[in-house]
Image 1 (cartoon, rainbow, N blue to C red):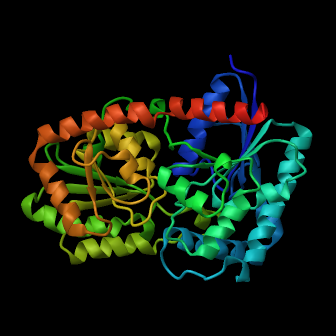
Image 2 (spheres, rainbow, N blue to C red; image 1 turned 135 degrees about the horizontal axis):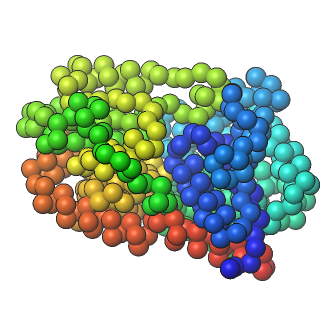
Length: 423
């Protein structure tokens, strides 16, 4: 066995909220634990969750950030949205992050988490501190006196198109870490150009654990949703968020349905962890998609399931004919990897990490972001040709095994951690 390691992973959200980051860290943690290492996760405590939880197999330490006050949390959330707009090149983008009044709230929340990290280290020291994503970006600078290597993984885009003030802001905080993990070569180049030293950057592709994606028992997913066995079934699994671009897929269904009236598109997903953390849900986007489907006359061809347990989602992956990731903005898009694992052709927008995964015309198709007509064209090609779907699916499964399986990610993280500890 490799040298015993103790890793403390810190993020805003984690189980039971199953976004891409959760699946990534969950797969990594279980793999480390399987090899006899210590791996614990610290994340924000939402309502009705235990502060300490061992039920998942990974020790979870949930931090009660409400102690900073309601107004501070609200300001933190607003600053997060500003940062997301800046990195995703969407919405209203503030010219300078440090002039925003909510910036101080953003720092206060990291300051609160700093206290928990130090308490945890004092109770049970760890070898590596690994911070995941932008919500806690300033944490390394606040923990300079904690003498362990600090790693940061940026799960959202680092685009060269960002405003210079935002690039410098993010890269400046990243320099406080011993190593920064980015998911694509494009993001590596942009971060380097923004001033992050090359010797602090590591590219690791996001990954999933194939063992978590199995179908147990009879696959009755189509029957439960009233979808025929021969209907062309399209699957879209994503958080309900305008950045995920589901409206483009609804628009594409208008064209697809004209040629294939029995085609069905299933949308799986609900709101964000942020809304749960604040004790409220924002359902407006989903309702707007349902309304759009009605207006376009494709209500019969579209199904919105909301949240589904993993076992039910796996059944849909196994029985669908194609997977679509229509994001307008995307850091990587692990739904693409999930579709590839199940041997399905994947159609995705040509943005972020999606083209890193899809080999256009070989394992699936890319379409220009926001182009519903182009997306519809790719889907109709797949609907007409079951043989093509099978060939693309097999190629995607092969690529997944070579690049995006958790065993590869585990080995790359193990090498990274050991390298930092050896100096």
